[in-house]
Picture 1 (cartoon, helix red, strand yellow):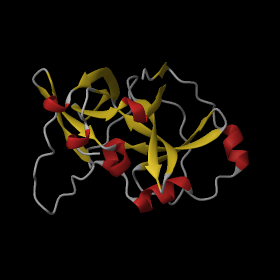
Picture 2 (tube, rainbow, N blue to C red):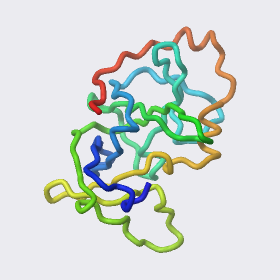
Picture 3 (cartoon, rainbow, N blue to C red):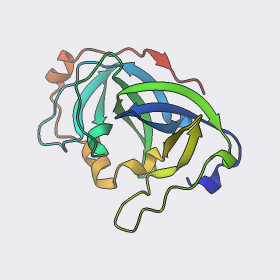
Picture 4 (cartoon, rainbow, N blue to C red):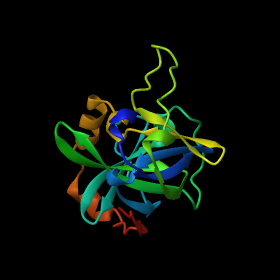
Length: 181
């Protein structure tokens, strides 16, 4: 969805990575979880931290810092997992996005969102819907459906055969907050 497709005020959830503010539409957010134990799955991309057990369902968790080539840091009490729905081959897929912290939910109108910066043809910025402003800070508004390539999503849907015995050892995660839509 491009900036031109935002015709009314849209509601966004903001989160931080490396002290920068990012946002995704609340419509794509299922819930926000405290950081839980993540089970590592061998032979997956570096940005895929592993999987969690979300009420009996295997959910892949992606470290957004690594995905965006930002420096890795230790997890803190503010580190959380934003559970999002991503469109993949005309189906919805659930992914956990690891963020430094969740900030707030707010609305922006079409006139408050600028198109993504033109950085050159060698840089892939297709996943950026636009740039918003919150006070004096810029917010990078993501198109969560375009953050991951088709190959990356395919790998996340089948990150190798996860042994059901391993699943039973994963702690079930309960949501901290429900996204307000």
